[in-house]
Length: 588
Image 1: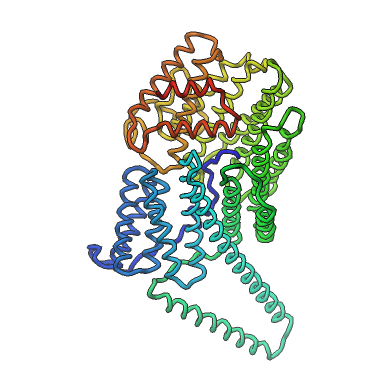
Image 2: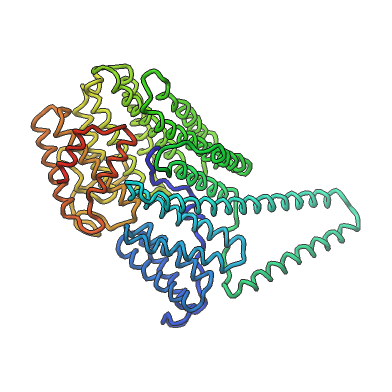
């Protein structure tokens, strides 16, 4: 399946974030009481949010966790449990690295479960359930990334199944709420029309009756607030059509991850496929116009996921002209149509367009890779499959360049553009490696290799990793990022302060891919000039020297290389023994 990119939908972190509950005590702060500890936790967490990342932000979140724990020890309330769970999740997902991050992430899951038992409000339970599902899913993702040999597949599946089941309940609850409020709105509108049409003394009786209904509602609300007074009062985020779509999209992602959480590739059962189909059909009724493109995109993701599984099952039996390599052309057409629809109905979320572009690129890359796998069955030399692969790699590059040029906004994750630059570097290397079977690639191989180095260097710089730049690979402007070279960074001389496993994994992939660029530049004849090969070889050794100085959880080791090579095999097919030998030689 296409690589995950850090493009989060609106609502997963901002709109869905529960308002932090503060206590009432405004005296001199000693943190000896429940209210003081809770207030202090909120204050520390908000300071962490202002710093966003780095060591200061992490220290504030750690202090927030301590104070929420103290509040929870004073009084076991929904406030304290929920706030501590959220702070622990942020700490483990946005700062800590495994294995250190496992304990706080598991504790976050425990506290979200506890918070569910500490409130009777269905709306609050839906909020905490969404976040519980997110924590379970995040833990599963990290375990899967680290489990190259699939020894923890059972726990990964169990966590994802829990996340799926919890989120399904959230979807059902949100849908029920939307249906009920929609019916109430219809009744209110009907009554207004009747009131305008009927001129009779009964109007006052109707008004009185309606006032009684409103009064009953107020009493019920007051009663609910009084019942929850021990828990504190909350600013509840009422379900909307848009947050409902957020839930649906996240739920589908979890279903798709379960389809691939297997030791051997296998197609999902008819029941599993039907469940996903029904979710999408139900969501279509409530999708606002500005979210329809995301729902359409989700349907294409389902098709891409299924296609990827089928390819994994049958790729060893595939042969040229079988047609299996063309199965993704329909997805290309669908994605292009969705992209065009954005000009007619602008999306609510500005990250939708770049997400479609990157998925389009991934799909073109996948087609090219499949054609090159099949091309291995043909005699050496130029071939129609190589020509088609070049075309699709060129299309992928075009879409990625367009995505890179889209202005960023507050919702664009810091890691998005570096991930796009990494994909551009991969595409450039893949095109350069066509030199033996494609004339255009052969004529431009020097420029393509330089592009591969340059894109990887810019990707590293975007995340604060500057030592991946190899002399001679020119950095250029146009990405909206700083491209200055040299200097020191927070969190160590060579790496920025740690910012969670997702960013760390991207950093490691960028470094390893730059090493791969260097291996192909020095171990093959892709770079014709001996002087250039020496230049790249010298740069390769400098990167390796920097890596040797990394320690602890930041150290890049054999397991990282093993995971990286496994991902290459997923994308490109079996790696040649010669390249495996290069890697073994490099990391001996």
